[in-house]
Length: 410
Ligand SMILES: Cc1ncc(COP(=O)(O)O)c(C=O)c1O
Image (cartoon, rainbow, N blue to C red; front, side, top):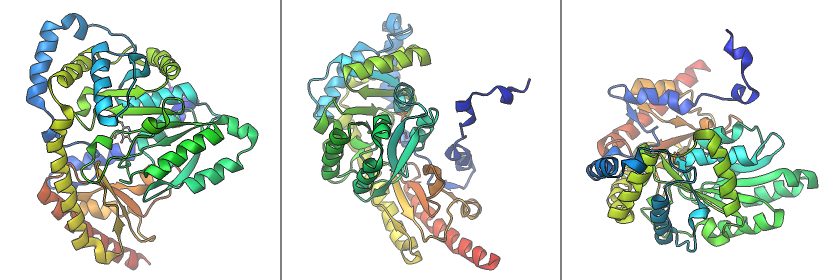
């Protein structure tokens, strides 16, 4: 049977992730990886979770080992509403404003299913989170790629593009997708002024905003900025949140916060996807939130990430400054974003990097149109401190060797 001849149009558009391919190298002994965008496993509260998991299985098996409702565990929602009040300062939420998803990734997929088709138009940053690109690509919408600046999306550019849409196209313009804090991959944060302006634009051009915020609680410097949801409310914003980066991704707990109608639509789509999120991990998370102060516990993690980030920035100053490289110094999250001179192709350079024992994620992985070749995403949270310095040194060696090879080829 030639299965390929029977593929759906959307399956034909599926691409395997460059990141997943690359991360295979991360496990080769001696290789230092700046590539992985995952939290440091040493920060996972394994003793606490093990104890809770046992109780949840033994004492609450009628719930935790059974199917649950598509909307999610009521107890988790109750705990989560408290967390959201404290962390985001968002009040007045009811369980009907929440949907528990299998990570934020599922929320992105459901949003794609519910709101997008081939005629749709959306806007997202360039570079953008790869998982969002994959989730939205299934429907094949037209994407307006908006350049990123130090304070987030270039809203002048977006406004100009929106003005140019015909009245008929404007109706098909659905939403702007934003990662407001410590952007993946670019590390930048959307300023308060831009958050307000984006909301004004949403009113003026009649679209909604998908605010995807996995990293906001990972701020280790500077003052927090109100979320777009807090500023604009459920009329214009759907907020995605996740426990992946603040607790652990293995639980696969994400939450959508939005208008009751939006939640109902997403629930319908989720029924076809997986019936419900796992009862077991939902209840473990609920009991964990009940027993521990997540934000208090996070402080230790943030101290560690800040220290690692500072080490990386210092190492870049030492090893990359004179090579005409610039980088983002993030105030939180997991990533920095490097910009090399135009003639450096970071995907091509990766072959040299692998020889020298250092890998990263090439910038073009995060662009829809294959541009961004002179950028790279690096993460400081996973490598041990000494590896961060050695990795930066190897990166320098790699750049020098790559330049030499290129000069010879010419
Ligand atoms: C911007 C962004 N959104 C969503 C996700 C998905 O997270 P999860 O499905 O683990 O909640 C990630 C993960 O890296 C991310 O960086």
